Image (cartoon, rainbow, N blue to C red):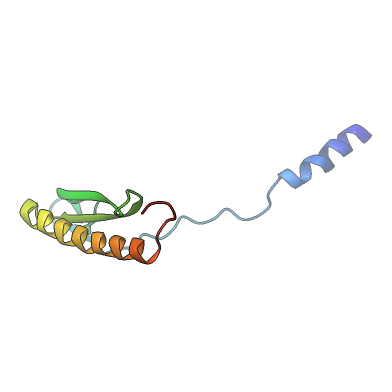
Length: 111
């Protein structure tokens, strides 16, 4: 009897009596269209990186090769030329920021 009580007391900290967390509410704009004579339900997803048919991503490094950041561009209309132009513009901006950061924060022994 004492062994059972001891096991229960030792196992008690492993048990959580906290309420189960609720699922997070969905964010973003979604609409639901229901036709009157059909049971078809269509959900319109917001445009994002995951749902875009045209998307590109590029890793940006500073002048000595250290990773600085990531740039992304996407288009839900599938316009790949616009995605390429947007990515090039974002990459150029981040490359300039990486160069300025490395200039202001040099690493000893690299010059």
